[in-house]
Amino acid sequence: MAEDIAAFREKFRCDELELWRGNGWCLSVRPEQLTYGSMVLSVLTDRTRFSDIDGADAIGFLAGLQQAERLAIEAFGASKVNYLALMMVDPVVHFHIFPRYNAPFNKHGFEWTDNDFPKPISVQPAPTDEGVLKAIWSEALDHAGTESQTLSAFETAPEWLLRQLFHTQEQLNHHYMYETSARDELQRLRETVSQQKAHIAGATSKRPGAVVSLIAPLRRVLSPLKTMLTSGLLRRYRLTKDAALVRTSGYFDEEWYLNQYPDVRSSGIDPAFHFVANGGLEGRHPGPHFDSAGYLARYPDVNKSGINPLVHYIKFGRAEGRTP
Image 1 (cartoon, rainbow, N blue to C red):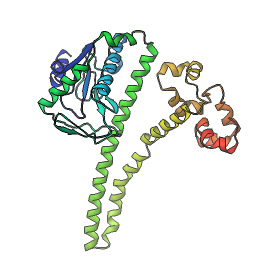
Image 2: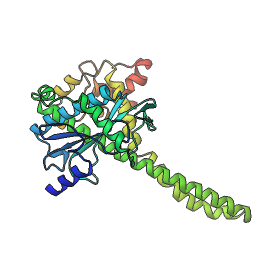
Image 3: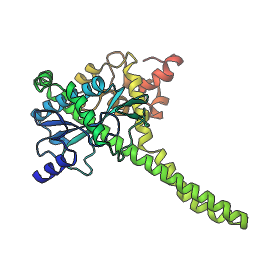
Image 4: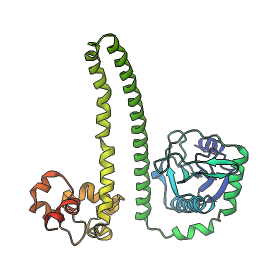
């Protein structure tokens, strides 16, 4: 493991481009600047799984995030900040931190454009001029704080909050990987369909009856696309939107929900997401002013539809005069 850590630090030039270090973590400028001010937050211990992070590591991790966000916004002028933890090649626990920008700008003699904004960033090689890299590092170093400036806010952070933070990050990483894989598969299928169309056009120009023999292989190509588009990715997108709707409804009380259902608190799952995905249909109440079980019992059509009771009430039931 010591060799892996050494190889990782050499690959990302962590010591040379270091900006901050504290409680087992190191923040450094990323050698390849995918977006302006890209950074790497890496653990200094032998952690290879995010779930191995303990209390002491967690304090340093949160402090590192605070430093990274402050640098991205104050030093680099970012509109948003993206965190990406893949550990697909390098086993050391680390995060790629990408400041995101909603408009192009000129800096150090180059025009910087965030082509993916506001979508998830596409990770790809981004060779960076050495002089520009050192200028970015110097600029960030002038804004970097000390360990003592960042740790105190997290020393008393409750364990359940830290667990929820880590669990949420792992969910986001999984979602990012799934979306990236789906996007790549979609592109591959588009290319295959284009090839099939060209093949059909060529064949039918010579033999009009040939189109029949090409329908079957074309269906085989399109079938995986249909499956992918109706899979969990779309379900998760819908649930995320429903969770946002529920949060602003006035009926969902997060603290009340966690106190009523301690298993949700201990799981670390976002309570609003849990409610729209499972809780509502299990008869759990989002707060003291909405009776999920009663709503499902009063309206069998809602129960049969599989729609979350509060989501149904907000979207349809209230306008129809149904009782919450």
